[in-house]
Image (tube, rainbow, N blue to C red; front, side):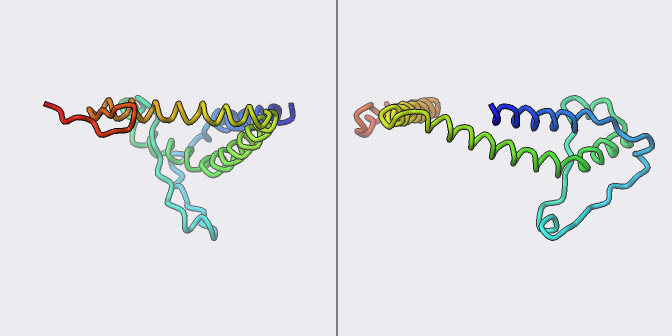
Length: 140
């Protein structure tokens, strides 16, 4: 219940940040990098236009969009990390609800699914292997 509430709050915060309107006259503002100790080592922010925007925006609008994205990048990354941590905590709690036998069964089901995915990937590349693990006969 608590994790569900925290997850909802995080998602609401992310959506809230995405819906913040741009300040008027922002196109004239030049984005200034805010370098702190750990940010200086990080890659510089590189904006990316949303799908189909490149076909319709002007150069000034492109600059403004990149500025907006840059301002929100750190907050979004912090929230993504928090959401990832909360999801991991939730998954661990759910896992601990299972008995040892159930955990073993889920582990074997996951392993079987992984092997099926690998086999399909190899098959799509044209490489086929027999189920017993022996080498495939040469193709003619």
